[in-house]
Length: 122
Image (cartoon, rainbow, N blue to C red; front, side):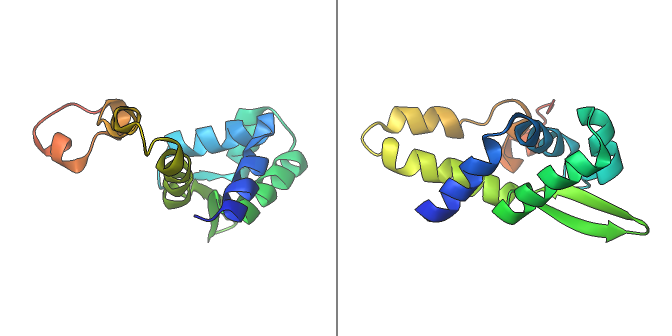
């Protein structure tokens, strides 16, 4: 991720509703959520959520797909991971212990290897 893309992503996330939408979509998983359901969960009008979804999609943090008559939105995990990596690469180069803490497989973000060892993933 280059600096321009990172700035676009951070700008999109700097608004309360958009940050809440991204967090909701991350939890929803790859199957995503329909726009109407997102609006309901956020407690905002469909037109309001549509405005925010457009900004998030423009930044590359979410993607959309059509399913029948609905538009379903999903978090772009690759872009989110690139954003975190962008932050950690430069700032932590001299402090590997910080990066190790971020990459430690805990909670819902356990690696496939940890899952295969029979760990329960929340």
